Image (cartoon, rainbow, N blue to C red):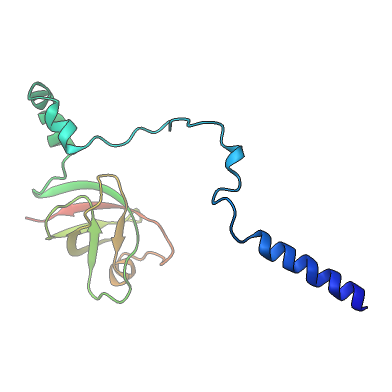
Length: 154
């Protein structure tokens, strides 16, 4: 029994010390060279400014279409998840607006609710967060990821 206990202790000591020190990259031999990523980094503002004014005229029409509308009417659709349940009120944080405004949200089931539209700061196409009270007003389940139509009021 003593012999097996000593062997077990020795193995634990060997394995424990094997993890200490040594090369900080123990699996470095698996690297097969520096391969570039298939994903290119996003362009920086400096590169965009250096592109020149020739592209600005072409991009102006595209930017207006891609920019979130701040006028009245249909702003688009978004997929929403439950926001902070401790935050009271009827609200929707969405990338479809850049300033806080009043609006209406329509769910796929046909129900609508008036609420405050808050800018989320996300990129166009990113999801939105909706308040607990707004989800209940629209008759949505708390774990649902509903597609909502966002309409700005004047």
